Structures are given as structure tokens and as C-alpha cells.
Image 1 (cartoon, rainbow, N blue to C red):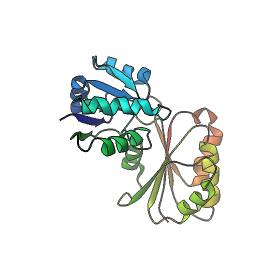
Image 2: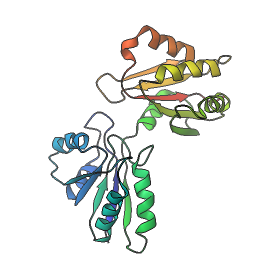
Image 3: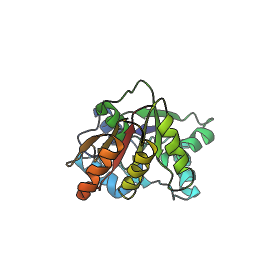
Length: 229
């Protein structure tokens, strides 16, 4: 029986990896990754010398067929993303669905190796109610975007999502408008676990003003959490 390991990797600080994850990566026949250059940095840090194969959103179907063939041939593979937990807002989810569909008779075992996740890291330190929350992944660029902000404004659960530095100001402006008559808290995590990590908390307008006054901080990876209605 072959195994496909879903291996969480650090979201910034390379020390945020489990002993088990390192062991699995060292023992795998091949490591499937989004960008081999990014994953190579992690492998070098832990003296891991295992062949890599890229698999990302633009990968051809033939690449997925090759991966499935390897599993059916008894190979043990480790799937990683560029950062964090694979298959969460990540192209690996499509591959995993295909493996589950195509490898039923081959008795391929799928084993999660848990670890770092940016949105979980923010929720753990954000001070919001986390008994219930909804993870939205990356917000849509256009279609359905304003409707989603209306849902966030009336949600009885904490809402959390990822945002890019190119759209964070637009998003904070939209949140300020959607939550205009509310004192609800918004928590923004920037560059979590990295050298310039920040967690900014306040009303949408307070957080927006902070970034307007500090344009040099509008860079890096962002996670946003919104207090429930």
C-alpha cells in the first residue's frame, strides 16, 4: 500500500515544522510542491535530499496522471504547499480529490501531517470569539465581492480570510463601509511568524487609518478576521 502524506510546512519561520513532518519528508519517494525553489529552501534547512515534482494550479492533467501512476506503483509521496497546510485555499485540493477518485482500488492511504496554518495562527492570538468561525479563503476579486461583505456584516460567526497586499486597502475600505454603524473589531495579521510580523486590532476605520498612515506596512501576506455581529 502506498501513502500520500499531506504535510503542513512553516508559513514563515522555518522552525515551525514538526518532527514528524521532517521525518516524513526525509522518507518520501518524492515531494510534490507548488514551487520547487520555495520548497528547496525548507529542504536545505533540514538536510532533506528527496526528489521534487511541481504541482500547481496550472499543471497539466498529464502531471496529475503521472502522480497517480506513482501512487499505484507503490510510491510514498508527500504533498506540500509553498507555506502552511496543503489543500486549504490551495491547488493541492484538486489533486487530492482526483487521487481519492482514481486510487480507490489501489488502496492508497491518505495521511494528514498537521502543522502551521496562517488563519488559525491569527485566530489563536486575535482575541475574537472562536467557538464558531467561517473561513472564506481568498475573497473574490470582482463577482460576488460586495455581496460577501454584506454577509460578513451580518454574520453571527467570526469571519476570517486571506488577502493580498495589492487588495488589502480596498478590502479595509469595503469593511469600513459595510460595518459603518458598528464598533465591531477587525483583526489583521501581517507577515505572521516572519521577521516583521504584526497583528493590528480595532474598528475597520481604525485599522484602515493605521495602514493609510503607514504605507510601508502595506506589504507581505495578510489574514483578516472580523468579529461576529
